[in-house]
Length: 334
Length: 152
Image (cartoon, rainbow over all chains, first blue to last red; front, top):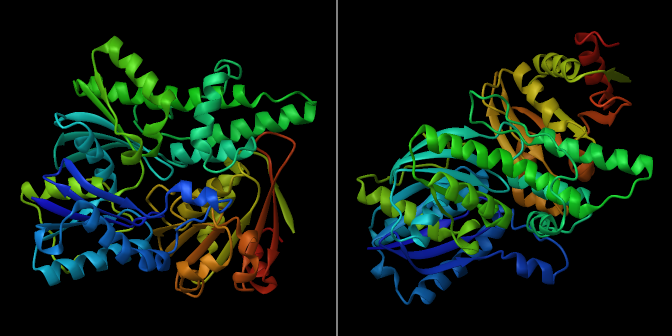
């Protein structure tokens, strides 16, 4: 079964062809950061009009790369939310037009569920149930996956997303965009015990996260050091900050896994590419007999292949959308 | 016009009161460095507006929408590189819409925001959680708000 998938929830315009939910035949993403660097800075593909300009080409490219034509497609899968309303509309309208013209079913997919499903593509043997941490520039969610289409939202951020905290701290120590991966690199050299930044756990009864206070603590530390004329070792700041984030992420994820008797933890989203996070998860997993799964770098970012996988699993489990569906910018996991 | 708030609690109390006083069409601009407390202030304004969801940072999503007693549009233009991108995003539809707009890093897009606005410049005080709010913008609306908040 071939799924043609479309993702336009935020900056990226992406189209993909996915076979049986786990095999990627093509996965085309418009705004690769490499391209931005060539133009000396970020050119965020934030605007819905940019999605409109690029989506036809990306769609064609996805079909060509997969070596298939429209007539071979069995299902259209599209991100319905959460995301930026104008951007989502471009993808959804395109998807509806295709489903109508080709007279094939369409399914609206939750973007966060898509991130989880990136792991079904990467790990052919992976099956629910498992505990999942989704961390990116825009999202921080702790989810218990009880089945392929049964996701239970257990924790979320109450202020900044984890990836956003990385990018903002990076900016404050003078690193260029995108800062998160650079923090990860510097953290490897720095001393993670140099500065004792706060671990915000909110309280023991909730799985929610909070990173705004940590970001402010780093900024205060930098200001105070500057005022006192102390030398700032950015490697140490990066390592100490990253450790403070990871301690909370890893601890809560394992706490949930144990509470639910999961023997699998899945990480997804842009921050799942963070080496520090992967290593820490794996070390703890080894100790506690829990296997850790994460996708390759390209499947960590926003991409359509993961939406194709999520759409497929929803469809074969009896779910389908109709052409009357609308975008849902605030869509939550149920 | 400026006020000094000595703690997170005082800031929250002020935000809730401000939220209660806001009305349809108000545009609130928040300026201040990273960590000044723009999103934190927006959270308490949201409480005052009757928003029940968690208000989280819109840095990545650019616009978050909430429904309180009025629609609340929470912007963060930190990530925008130039004002042209605003047109592409259709910001004007929100600015002249029927809700309350709260715009973080508003000074980055100053000339795009209607003159009828309330501006709060947030500065850090001497103590860790002390903040100084400096008000400017549309005088008539500001006077009204100050009276309602008993800050005049």
